Length: 98
Image (cartoon, rainbow, N blue to C red; front, side):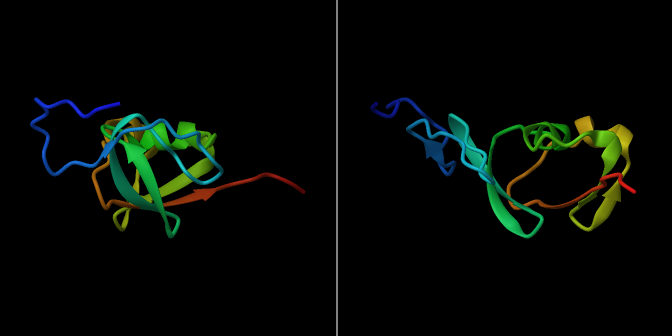
Protein backbone atom coordinates (compact mmCIF):
# COMPACT_ATOMS: atom_id res chain seq x y z
CA UNK A 1 0.00 0.00 0.00
CA UNK A 2 1.43 3.38 -1.02
CA UNK A 3 1.20 6.40 1.32
CA UNK A 4 -1.28 9.10 0.35
CA UNK A 5 0.63 11.80 -1.54
CA UNK A 6 -1.77 14.45 -0.25
CA UNK A 7 -1.24 13.57 3.41
CA UNK A 8 -0.42 16.70 5.42
CA UNK A 9 -0.07 14.98 8.81
CA UNK A 10 3.69 15.37 8.98
CA UNK A 11 5.37 14.42 12.24
CA UNK A 12 2.90 11.66 13.07
CA UNK A 13 3.84 8.01 12.89
CA UNK A 14 1.65 6.19 10.36
CA UNK A 15 1.25 2.43 10.55
CA UNK A 16 1.22 1.09 6.99
CA UNK A 17 0.40 -2.54 7.71
CA UNK A 18 -2.08 -4.28 9.95
CA UNK A 19 -0.40 -6.21 12.74
CA UNK A 20 -2.16 -8.72 14.93
CA UNK A 21 -2.27 -7.86 18.60
CA UNK A 22 0.00 -9.91 20.79
CA UNK A 23 -0.15 -10.10 24.60
CA UNK A 24 0.81 -6.76 26.11
CA UNK A 25 0.77 -4.87 22.79
CA UNK A 26 -2.10 -2.87 21.33
CA UNK A 27 -1.92 -2.17 17.57
CA UNK A 28 -4.27 -0.08 15.47
CA UNK A 29 -4.53 0.86 11.83
CA UNK A 30 -3.67 4.54 11.31
CA UNK A 31 -1.88 6.92 13.62
CA UNK A 32 -0.24 5.70 16.81
CA UNK A 33 0.98 7.20 20.03
CA UNK A 34 3.14 5.77 22.78
CA UNK A 35 2.22 5.64 26.46
CA UNK A 36 3.80 3.96 29.48
CA UNK A 37 1.41 1.49 31.11
CA UNK A 38 2.54 -0.06 34.39
CA UNK A 39 6.16 0.62 33.50
CA UNK A 40 5.99 -0.81 29.96
CA UNK A 41 5.78 1.05 26.66
CA UNK A 42 2.52 0.52 24.75
CA UNK A 43 1.45 1.73 21.32
CA UNK A 44 -2.13 2.98 21.04
CA UNK A 45 -4.32 4.34 18.32
CA UNK A 46 -4.94 8.06 18.30
CA UNK A 47 -7.84 9.52 20.33
CA UNK A 48 -8.02 6.71 22.89
CA UNK A 49 -9.56 7.37 26.28
CA UNK A 50 -8.59 5.87 29.59
CA UNK A 51 -11.80 3.80 29.41
CA UNK A 52 -10.69 2.44 26.01
CA UNK A 53 -7.45 1.16 27.56
CA UNK A 54 -9.35 -0.53 30.40
CA UNK A 55 -11.66 -2.21 27.86
CA UNK A 56 -8.77 -3.34 25.67
CA UNK A 57 -7.05 -4.83 28.71
CA UNK A 58 -10.35 -6.49 29.84
CA UNK A 59 -10.36 -4.57 33.14
CA UNK A 60 -13.62 -3.60 34.87
CA UNK A 61 -13.64 0.06 35.89
CA UNK A 62 -15.11 -0.72 39.32
CA UNK A 63 -12.14 -3.03 40.14
CA UNK A 64 -9.28 -0.66 39.32
CA UNK A 65 -7.50 2.41 40.61
CA UNK A 66 -5.76 4.48 37.96
CA UNK A 67 -2.88 6.88 38.36
CA UNK A 68 -2.59 9.17 35.31
CA UNK A 69 0.60 11.22 35.04
CA UNK A 70 1.07 11.02 38.81
CA UNK A 71 -2.52 11.77 39.87
CA UNK A 72 -5.25 9.36 41.02
CA UNK A 73 -8.22 9.66 38.67
CA UNK A 74 -11.87 9.41 39.79
CA UNK A 75 -13.72 6.53 38.13
CA UNK A 76 -16.45 8.81 36.79
CA UNK A 77 -13.87 10.60 34.58
CA UNK A 78 -12.29 7.53 32.91
CA UNK A 79 -14.21 8.05 29.65
CA UNK A 80 -13.51 11.81 29.65
CA UNK A 81 -9.71 11.55 29.66
CA UNK A 82 -8.21 11.36 26.18
CA UNK A 83 -4.67 10.01 26.30
CA UNK A 84 -1.76 11.86 24.74
CA UNK A 85 1.63 10.75 23.49
CA UNK A 86 4.04 9.93 26.37
CA UNK A 87 1.32 9.79 29.07
CA UNK A 88 2.09 7.54 32.03
CA UNK A 89 -0.56 5.20 33.48
CA UNK A 90 -0.38 2.93 36.50
CA UNK A 91 -3.39 0.64 36.81
CA UNK A 92 -4.00 -1.39 39.96
CA UNK A 93 -6.46 -4.24 39.48
CA UNK A 94 -8.18 -5.69 42.53
CA UNK A 95 -9.04 -9.38 42.72
CA UNK A 96 -11.31 -10.83 45.38
CA UNK A 97 -10.61 -14.03 47.21
CA UNK A 98 -10.53 -15.59 50.56
